[in-house]
Image (cartoon, rainbow, N blue to C red; front, side, top):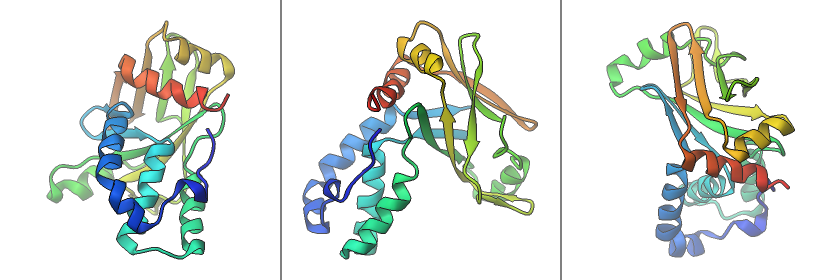
Length: 197
């Protein structure tokens, strides 16, 4: 998948004119890229549209007009876009009751360790999620994480072909859940691999 460039980003006035339509488009895109793994973990797989939306919304909220500040946002969010053979996601630990936030997050300590979150394609090897560092410290874990999944060529082909079920699994001592991806989600994620060819 290519990276976003300055040419992809419009100024605040131009964004205001397109915002409603673009926002509807991104909501539709995210429906096919949002995977709920049980009741407390949700992953949203990022692509050019979702990252462009994040940048434009930050520019709008913070009234960013300087080129160097825009480039800073591009540099930050381009890091979250997948390289060839990868999928990247923002993982949210969902807590509906404000009073239970600390309790739930405490129970999820260690979720951001290698081996807890992975794809399983049919009966093949696992595709492990690698969490970006810096979202946990001491005994506290963040509710938001960035995860990268790196696939072999054979695993990419298996996901794209769709002949075998693709499961997304969270395997943590206090939270074991999995879900089989719908065909819509699988096809949407397969587009990320095809975009790198």
